Amino acid sequence: MRKRDLAIIRDLERFRCLTRDDIIDLHFSRLKQPVTCCNTVLKRLRRDGYIEVNTNHQPYLYFPSPASIKKDSTKIPHFLKIVEFYKSLLKFEEPKTFIVEPKYGKGYMEPDAFMIWKRAPFFVEIQRSVYSARVMDEKVKRYEEYFFSNEWQQEAWQPQNKKVFPTVIIITDTRYNIESSYFRFYQVTHISQLVNMYEAERDEIKVNSSSLKLKRMG
Image (cartoon, rainbow, N blue to C red; front, side, top):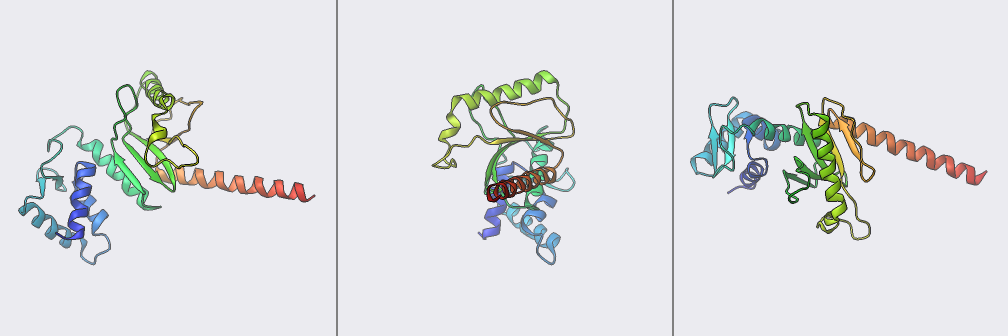
């Protein structure tokens, strides 16, 4: 099996499902005939029993074999939103780690993804529906419970010299009145907003650092 075949199967296992267009974006976008090449590869993988397909979905929706979710699951739109978010990251930088729906234990939060991106750890919440204040407060509480557990300090990705609790990114069209005294929340409609915020903070740090040096020299 080719390296690209294995990469497609791994992505199907990671994201649960992908549309034909998602697979083109992730694995065929640099080819001269991406659609034709993708269709040929997917037909072969399907024929050989490595992947499954829902032909009632347009574009076709592909799954690993055996599929980890039902082909008409109500969670399919949710998983496709996670894929959409992942692809938006690639426009800036490929994540070093991207885990879909990681599990941390009963009573703790259930993020849509954990990622290490731009050398920093993040929990990701993708919320396109509107939630009540009570639901959002409960979500913050679950993150704080995990923070106080200190279990996050044992994660394999943690630096040796300084333990870091991931920043929480909420991708949302609705602004919520939430905060925590223990870690940072960012609410953005698109990842480009977060990039702009980080760049602005970095520039401010540089300006403050330069001002401090000038004062010391004076």
